[in-house]
Length: 185
Image (cartoon, helix red, strand yellow):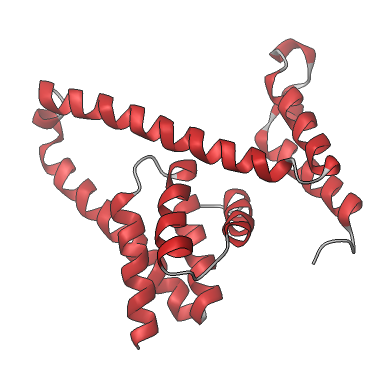
């Protein structure tokens, strides 16, 4: 029971201090689960994060489920997701009650401006960590360059489906499967 409460509490903390979702949550996950609790490595988190991105649903919830399940099985996965979602649900409920008056307050607008900058910095930190992981292997670097080029090319140069994130992820997965079959554990 103590392990389950620990997982719930850890993901409650991740949910409370994650602003912006997606990439912005990686530094919080790193601090809470890798550095503080030593439950995972950054490579494991990034593998779970990658799978979470291609699954339907919210990345943070998917990541919570995968990590919780790895730590203590399916019940821990459910508790991790509940812990992660609880702070956001509470904030959304409070904001929904006051949104019409809340969003127009200058202090709130100023706070949101500061939060957007902080989220941008957290995302940049995550991108730098992701890119460092890419440079471990020339094959990974080539996949990175391929995806980057296809994602930034002007719309008229490629059919729309070739610029789609789903297409780029799927093709990268197939290329990774071909290039690394049997060579990674």
